[in-house]
Image (cartoon, rainbow, N blue to C red; front, side, top):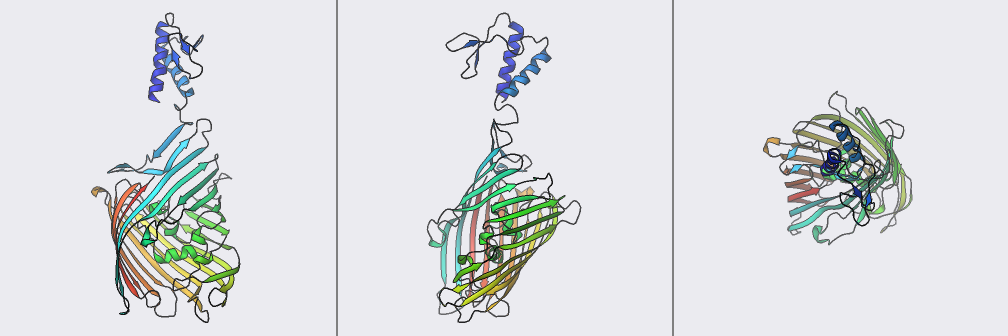
Length: 466
């Protein structure tokens, strides 16, 4: 861009100082300007600057012409990826979500493309409480997430977002896995010129949990809490089966989302033990919503993330209710009939102040099946919570130790369905979320009815994302 402006300015200066001695020629096919005649070149009879009476006139003419050269203004033909508001990390500034391309002929439209790769080296030691079972030790290396992300803007209000993913590639000897579609939604932003009303259609996340709604590139630990992952499947398949939703905010003080759409699928309709077996014949749409408040002035939540890199502050509390009024069918193996009304309540609180971050959520599940293969189906409830915290040290190269505790009673009122999990680790944000590495130690204790074992995992993790 600077070279183009300099070149045009040089031509103008020459034209002013030696206009009587220089004749300019243009190649119409390329737009190039020459001082000598040649094949295909046409003499320029008039050109900006020929009548300039001062240096000021020449500069103004140069600016006019440079604005007409593709790529020399801010209206199009631009490519951006770096976040100019980012801190300077060890490897540079963090990138935006994907690289953005703005076309020359339609500056109100855009295209984004990017990748997300999370790699994991993991060792899992399993100690079974039953002496009749042999303890195991497995070392594994896999891609926790491998994704290609694209998005397109169609104008001031409308855009489309989609990603193609293959998660847990080579995890636990399962091979390469399959590519699937994750997000795939049409977004209509501020159609009535107010932040209170926005829409998403098709495959977009419903807010069943804060940690499930935060983009996986922005979470502290790549493996979310067990109970949050269960909530992600309890109402709608992977919390993003085809739906329609309206959402918005008022001065960042109040955020809301309401949605209706396709409910969960049979392969994700698990019992308290974690097994499948449903064969659904009748099912309604899910419906529900969430509201999040930032009650303190100056502590508003401006971005849903778990990684703040020691900047700013926020405090928010939220509550959600989601329901699938009816799921009817029969169990594949036993033929037992079921008629379920799934209900999920989620409560959240999160806050950060500079380097310190803390987040906690509570979940309550209704109409949980104890065991699909039992002679008589027993339906009940489940609840639990987790808390996550991190502290970032910018002065130490953005090293950030973190911890998480989780407790979940997968079927209330019966022993042997308790899960307790403790996770500690450290992340090193080499370039924010664009490039980071980490070390994680996790200890999980499963009750007698949900595994009757203790798992100890050590992970070395990494992420490359832009």
